[in-house]
Amino acid sequence: MTCNLIKTQGVKVPDTQKFKIMEEGVLAIFWLIVLSVGILITIIYLRKFSNQERLSMIEKGLNPADMATVRNNQPIWPLRFALLFIGAGLGLFIGYFLDMALDMEEVAYFSMLFIFGGAGLGISYVIEDKKEKESMASS
Image (cartoon, rainbow, N blue to C red):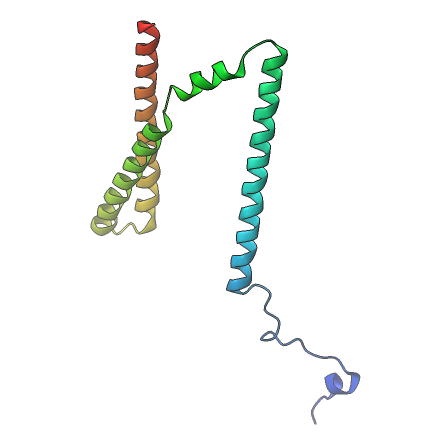
């Protein structure tokens, strides 16, 4: 004798094949929307705070155009990113050899990536500091 309790009372067992909320397409669109909204909010707040900074400089009697030229005369981002990516590439390269030689798997890749990426940023800091001291000594 079988139990027909589910059929007689009208209770349905949820079918997992019909109800897929977390499919790949849905997740991809969700993350795209979240990322777009996050970037938009970041841009709005950056514009808002730069405008507030300019207004406070005007209230204090300073010229905001003078500060813009000081900031643009020191391009340091290309050096930072170049040395960061060189260090990260070197870290992945050495991590590959550690993985092949010592069979370390993912540990070698991530550790060497962070070690050499951080070393690249440290070298960029030293170079920027040296340039800043040279420019202060010459002026």
